[in-house]
Structure formats: C-alpha cells, structure tokens
Image 1 (tube, helix red, strand yellow):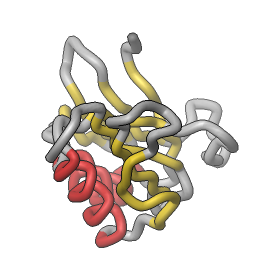
Image 2 (cartoon, helix red, strand yellow):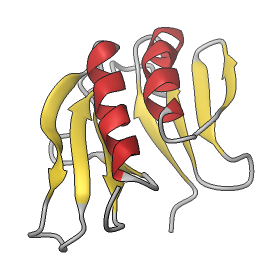
Image 3 (spheres, one colour):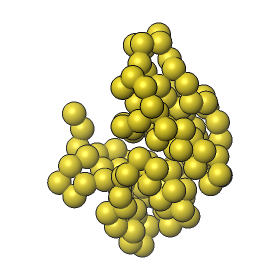
Image 4 (tube, helix red, strand yellow):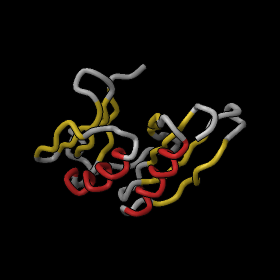
Length: 127
C-alpha cells in the first residue's frame, strides 16, 4: 500500500542504534546508513527513512500518527517491544491482543528516543 515512510530525527546515526535493534527483530534490514540518513526495508519495496527534516527545522513527532510494522509472529512483537525498551524507547502499549480491531490482532506500541510512535503488529493466530 505504501512506498515509504519518513521519520524525523535530530541525529540519524544515533537513531540507527535504536532502529537497528528494533527493526532487526522483525527481519527488516538496514539498506544504508550515510551521513544524516538511514533507510530500512527493501530497495524496490516498502522502506522507512530516518533523517533530519529537509526544511532544516526541528523534527517533531506527530500527534495521533504512528508507523506500524508487520510481524510474522507474536514472538516477534514481544521481541520488538523488549528491544525498544532496551534501547531507550518508552512504552505506549505493551504486547497483547487488541480484539476491538479483530480477534487475532496482537500488537505493541513504543516511542523511539526522540518521541516518534511506532508499533509492531501480528495479524495471525497463535505464536
């Protein structure tokens, strides 16, 4: 459905420490890490860019917006959440079922060290 998302950061190289660990739990590889920009995902598929805003202004997390990453298993959601907290992220909703979305919706919400809200979600039943 999407080509890419961009997350603002004051220091993309520092943010990479967090995202390498967190997205790594979902099998999402780092495509590149160059001066001021980091990318994760597939070269010709969906990806996430982390960088300082092009307008030179300060990055600010959106209110109500977040990026949700697909997990193949609930175990990956748990690992995503643990890695986020271990690497300076904060809790926004621990791993668990959210049946108000659908019966098998298992997700976890965190904020990265700069306040951006991200999520991992598994739509499959079981582990």
